[in-house]
Image (cartoon, rainbow, N blue to C red; front, side, top):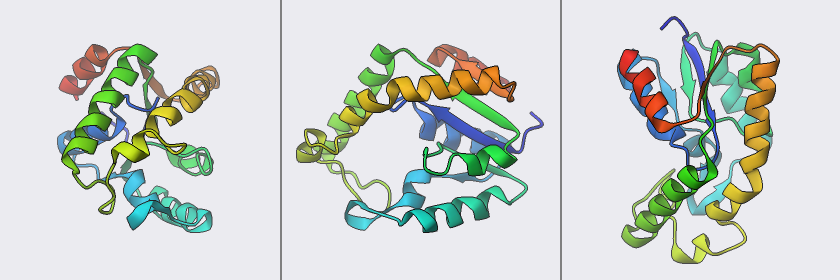
Length: 170
């Protein structure tokens, strides 16, 4: 694989972070967890200008893998990336994955992004990642299709099996 600046993008629950980590292991390209860069302890969001600064600094490097791009600053990686790996899985699949992950994290209290934890209360709140899945699903899929139509370098996966097959060839 020649690309050295890679954005993993997909619907919530599609496995972007897991894929980014595995791709980094296979290629040696540094992977950056966007959630770790944008959420401080106690689920306090890093101010937007600082997020843009951090992402800009990463994207100015010769090599990087980002495990997503927030709509607030998606233009920054788009200016420098060489490849978008798009995880465009059906809602039933990504939602099932998301539910399993959320239940497991709420049950075991495992810390994620800067010591934050997913809780039962949070899972059923206005800020629920599950609710976010429903709010963002169509928009994220439309963005993937837009990038394809613009002629960007996009590898478009519709199933996890396709993604796994590609990853094993990298």
